[in-house]
Length: 412
Image (tube, rainbow, N blue to C red; front, side, top):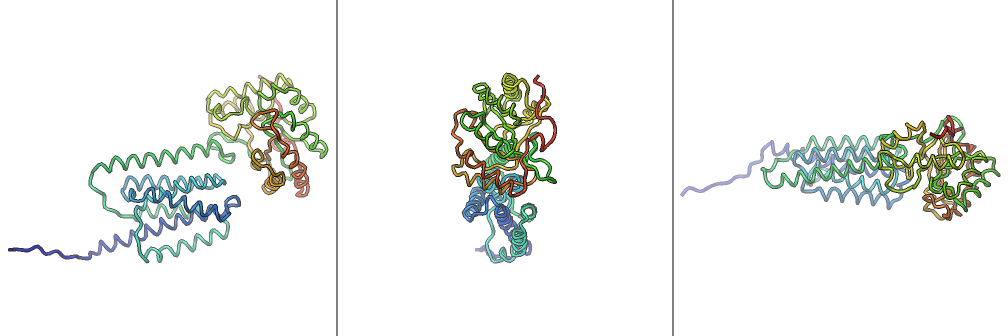
């Protein structure tokens, strides 16, 4: 009777495969470290708890993708997702966006590398990139950390070598996983483009004036307000300051005398939509602009040349409508989130911390066009802000003086 003898043979190709897998795993791990350190360079996300949350987000994404990765279609999808996520990271400074991008980046890297190899070899391979990342972190270079992390993702995708499984029902699951992940990433990218003042993919707008001088622009949104707008004007007049008020059309119609008084007093005015809601900006025709211009025409007989989208939301269609009216879209680069803050000192501190020559500062004399909104907190914060700007030798001016061009245009 002839027996079958099995022998375990170590083949050089197997050693090469293990070595490549170790390098791929090390690249994937250090890419995650680079992402976390990039977030940690920011003033807005440097609390220890924020860093821990980002790490958890990265791990969550990687765990979700673990086991699905390694196959070629998912490596491609994972590379796309991870690279888009790390590219979007510098565009947003808030913690929630960093967490969402962390999940996407972790999932992308997880799909690229698949289940991570274990062993001391990974640690030895990762030492060099980690040292470079730490040095970049302490130089405060977020761009360098982003670039290094992107290179590590590409390296992991090139190095990983895993045998393709035979055709099976997994193929359909692979396609669904890749499609959902890519659509989620593209969807968030569209959100970033529509809501981020400094991003100009969807038409953008003016976010600051010249940085070579010492002027800044104070702007106020969501009015007119029966209890706050005129007290704000009195504070400004006492300091010899003029500002620009971006007003909501339906509030103008309710209290047109405030808009008229602002105009006579020499304040700047701007169009801030008619309803100030969450969805009308998605209408490609964007009739909100004309309705608000009509409200201005009835109140003061002339129309503003500046438009500011509520919440900063805009699309290329909105930008086209604004341009067709020979108006300019104006956003901001200094915001305190004063609509949700109750402490006037915190509001003032946030504004003054971000203020620099050319800043367009946004505050809120109203809330969503409600003429009766309580804005007492802003009345207490504004004198502190004016005093702080003066101490920094920054001079508040009307928006048209800061960025040039007319403040008003004939109504159509």
